[in-house]
Each structure stands twice: as C-alpha cells, then as structure tokens.
Amino acid sequence: MDKLRITGGNPLHGEITVSGAKNAALPILCASLLTAEPVTLHNVPGLRDIDTTLKLLSQMGVRVAREGESVTLQAAELTSLEAPYELVKTMRASILVLGPLLARFGEAKVSLPGGCAIGQRPVDQHIKGLEAMQADIHIEHGFVLANAPRLQGATIRTDMITVTGTENLMMAATLANGETIIENAAREPEIVDLAELLIAMGARITGHGTDRIIIQGVERLHGATHSIMADRIETGTFLCAVAATGGELMLRRTSTDTLGATLDKLREAGLHMEEGPDWIRAHMQGRPKAVGCRTSEYPGFPTDMQAQLMALNAIAEGTAIIVETIFENRFMHVQELNRLGAQIEIDGNTAVVQGVPRLTGARVMATDLRASASLVIAGLCADEETIIERIYHLDRGYDRMESKLQAVGAQIERIKG
Ligand code: EPU
Image (cartoon, rainbow, N blue to C red):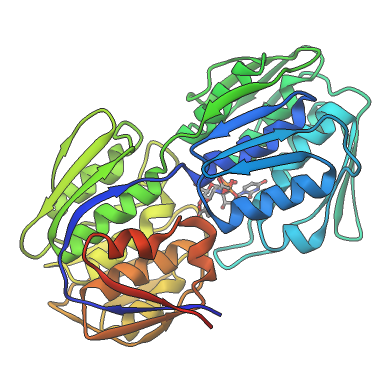
C-alpha cells in the first residue's frame, strides 16, 4: 500500500489547477445509463472512484472511451443490470445506478452498500422514493432487487436531506410517466450540475438548487456534452492548506459561488482572498485564528470540509468548537491528529480543538477520504517528517494531490508499497 512522506514547515507558493468535482462526476457518469446515445463529459477528474464507476458501467455493457479529462459513454445495449458487491463495497456511490437502470430498463439489481468508516449511511430514502414511484423493491441476499414496468410520477418527501438520494430520484423521474416532485431535496451544487446535464439530454426539470425539484417525465432522453463543475471540496482543501502553512496560492479553474460557507470560515481564520469568476488568490501571514463550525447541508458548512478545518484549527490561536451533524462517526482523524501533537477532545458529535503553536511529525493512518486530506494539511505544517499510511483513501477523491502540492513547494512524496 502506498504511503505519503511529508516534511513539514514549507509555506506554499504558486498555482494549482483545480480538477472536476468527484461528487458531480459520479452521478453524471451514471446518468449516461438513461440514454442509448453517446454522452460526452469533459473535466472528469482522475480518481479511483471514477475508475471504479467506469468499471461498473463497462461491466454492464456501457461503451466507455476515456482520453485525458474527457470520457464518452454509450449505453446503447446493456448486457447486465447488476451492480455487484465487489464494486459497491469499495464505493457506495454505486447505488446511483439504481434510479437510471430502473427508469430505462424496468429492472435493477444493486448490492446494498454496508456501513462505512464515517457512519451507517443507509439508502432507505432512495428505496422509499422509488417505491412511491410504483417500483416493486425487495432486499434479498444483500441486494436491492427492483422492478417497475414504468415508473410513475409521484410527490416524494424525503425524511432527511440526502444528496445521492435526491440524485437517484431525480434521474429516475426523468423517464417516469408524469410529474414527480421531490420535496426536502438536497440543494448541493453537484445536484445542479447533474440537472444541467439531464436537461441537456432532454429532461424537463425545474427547481434544482432549491428544496423542491419538479420533473416532468419524458419518453426518452438523448445524448449530450457536458463539462463537470470544479471541485469545491478540493478547492477548500488547498485553501485550508495555505491557511495552515502560510504563503500564497493561486487556484485556477475553480469557482467561488459554491464555496460561501467555507470562504467565510477561512476569512475568519485570517486568510486573505481575492476572487475572480474562475480563480481565487489566497494569501496567509502569521498564525491562523481558531474558527468553529457546525456542519450542515448546503449552503451550510460542508461535512466534507470538517476534517480539513479541524487540521487548521489544530495549529490556530485559540479554541474551536466543531460540531458534526451529518455523519455520526466522522471524527476518525482526531486520534491521528492528536498523534501529531494536536489537542482535540471529542464529546459525542462535538470536538473541542485547543490550538497548539506547532505539530510534530509522526506516523499516522488515513481512515477515510477527507480524514486523509486533514492529515496531509497537518503534515505540511508539522515539524520534521510525517508518514501517512493507507493513502488509497486519498486517491479515491483527490486528483494527483501530491504532485499538485509538490508544484507549489511542499516537500511531499509518494512511497510505493
Ligand atoms: N441517510 C439516510 N438514509 C438515506 C440516505 C441518507 O439515513 O437513504 C442519512 C445518511 O446516513 C447521513 C445523511 O442522511 O447521515 C446525509 O447523507 P447523504 O445521503 O446526503 O450522503 P451521501 O449522498 O451518501 C454525499 C457525498 C458525500 C457527502 C454527503 C453529504 C457523494 C457521492 N457523496 O453522500 O461525500 O459527505 O453527500 O454532503 O456525493 C466525500 O466526498 O468524502 C463524501 C463522503
């Protein structure tokens, strides 16, 4: 298993080009199942989760052509309507094939994702919504078995706000008979990006980006071309890194309008930022100030930035209170940050971070994707050497993170294992 070796203490200086958003690309790749015509996507990030999704789609019979950051998918005829356990267990987002398969082919067999490092993460809301659209769904031998000669439009109100749940139901509804209304829908920018692709494919959707999405089903969708939005979490991660190490970073091919809550917190911490339509220049001098946060659904502070903000707080002046409200177990990075000398205590879903002037390098272990990113940030400002093990988590969701950081002066290298 690969490791990262980081020698901390260098401020970051230079330019980074932000990649396409993982959490927009994953549902968008699955949306290609909704049409027999080719769907061409640009700005697709080079990630392990993207490789896994393409493998899953190819196994079903989708023709995939990938060249650099562009991918063309054509689901003309499928040979299988199944998402097997081997793939779903490595990537929960595989559940996103359920809605499209059921809507276009009238059946699907998708392995139930199990629990994961950050919480239980059930998919009951995906199932409840599809049942409201008259799908017949059974759980057997660890699989979701779904049938529906034609999905019927329905009004669905999810019990909680769910991002992939909203995406699955929105995709399913594009080919249903009649009107579907999703109430209590997630408002994440990645849902808007997916809706924009679906509309380009001929879907009739309004209200995306609000908590009430209305979809008028159509008989069929056609091919389209779409460029994936910039990754707001990757952007936020590099901004946390420069806020922690000091220096000046220019982030290109990003966007600022999806990052409001994160930028507010970083400004409070002392990061100076100038913004243009697709760039952010960030400059940090001195020690950051402690900033608390309470994670919530968009447009609140994203749970996917919580671990990185915690790493920043670990070396900040003052004490920060961080409350995680989305996932019940998303503090796995705390023990590892404490191994680097951080002073963090957890009480239920609240972490109290007492900033220390310096961290000291150590061997630590990545436990999930964003936890890994927080350890990289901590390693970049820790004295001497930090070794991060199990960085396959990082490769799932960050496109060449160590090369991007090397290019701006970080001493970071991958040790092949
Ligand atoms: N939930 C249920 N039942 C459901 C669906 C969700 O109880 O049927 C609960 C979850 O257990 C959780 C909460 O509702 O407590 C919200 O979960 P959500 O469904 O919104 O999460 P997700 O769709 O599985 C996506 C991202 C995550 C991100 C969350 C929250 C993708 C592929 N994944 O997950 O991204 O943390 O939304 O914003 O879009 C990451 O990129 O590191 C990551 C984990």
